[in-house]
Length: 381
Image (tube, one colour):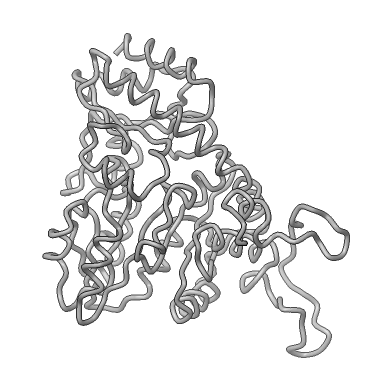
């Protein structure tokens, strides 16, 4: 019988150390490996090419995503960069029109210079995705839920559209917000899954990393070659920290979601709040899709205030339990105003974020303390 998710998170890729019996994966803090003869080694030559701690993380993440192969990178953006490197000049990419600001910056400011073409569309509308695909389209890039508007795209439906084309583009899904505990895009028709392991997978705001998971052997070979050639790999300590974080992923995601649901319900009834966005809230336009492809609504909540930008800035500065900071997915609760922080790269573009939007990464503190903190902060706003 295949182990359940929680068991895989603790054990997949992580056998006890054969030398000492250590139950935790050792941190192989080495740059090179002694060979018994020229080209005769024990599977490792140089730590840019491969490291046992990194291999354990890659195998674990692959198991959690239901993938055959996994590759770890030094950041989520390094992983994203690797996916786009599969393309060549003249290729076309269809991307969601509500993606992380760093993703837009990489696509718009860097890869356009190399002859790639990008169209940004509402990927919650399958017909708009279909209409955007051309004979030159080689990649469709989804975030679901998106950052920061928490829009949800139907992965299976979009995969079905692409599967009916004469030359099927790759479907890549950034699964950072959902994590493999809530959603497994490969099972829904995706070719590649990308993560910022900095976020929920690491879970403790103490590491930066990324990953790509896939089932296709040819894709794996191409990406593994580039991983080694480019060298944007995580160090063994970073891999160890993500492995440690993943062990409690299921537990944390349940608490993140229960707290976030309570926060969303509280905000939806608050007199100062104009709009609440949470994938499992009845008011969410794609709630039915979210419930179909996700285990729960996750830990992210976005909202706007009736007082607009001024009120958003005041509220973000007034919280005491919610820390005013970028990033997300850690055990501690964070608050930010994306237009002035994580999504500044979209200012002036069609992807610009409402300057009055507030994004919460709801942590695992006691829910009563979170609600009380929002109450006093909104009162000041």
